Image (cartoon, rainbow, N blue to C red; front, side, top):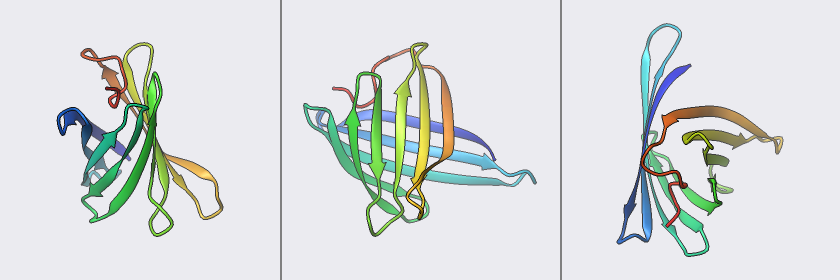
Length: 131
């Protein structure tokens, strides 16, 4: 499906937390639009380990565990009672944000189900979770 994605990362909780607002407007081949929204709240420590929760418009709540690197953060989501997946937020050398979403299948294999690349990011070339 064609999609238009909006992401907003911002600092919260006196600099100890990060808030993500996510909106995905998808258009099916028949022209019908579908909207998906989510918000996540993370607390990150000085070592770059982040923990939090994801809340979305399906009514789903998922635990989050992320690790920051110089150019990316990798967030594992879900647990044994929910769907499980992984999202990678990568800042490219040309200052674009690439987001790759994967889900863990019943067969134990990771499958990419979403890939988004932003326009160049001008304000900050670090990952959204670096302090």
